[in-house]
Image (tube, rainbow, N blue to C red; front, top):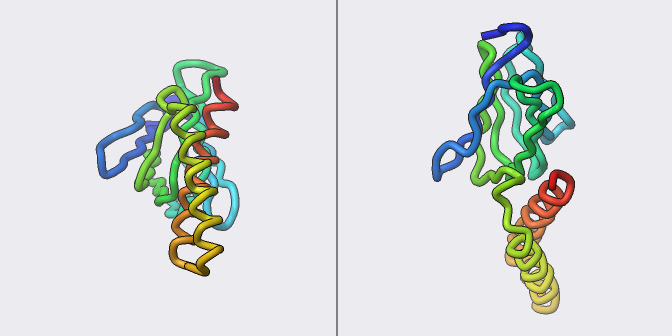
Length: 143
């Protein structure tokens, strides 16, 4: 693609495509640090953390889309960035009330798991908490 520094960004989950736009810049948090992707970046595959992904849209100089991505993988090759994630939501689609409820529920599950010393339940609840906090942060920063 590379029409004036533009490349394609696709975000896909098991439920289907969540995001597909042309971009000038993509920022994602890999397990070993933040990644900034521009057109013509070297091919890369990276494991992603539960974090916000930001895409600077090609159709505007200052329109940046925010997507809450709950882990997964990013591949960049031939000016196409593809993120494959278990789940992902654009900031505009996140139900803040539901995300806050999920956070409270996860915190309660963590406390309950600590009381009975259930490591597996605690770890699952910690992942649920991280996902809820990510969704809350993404929607709070971009609305």
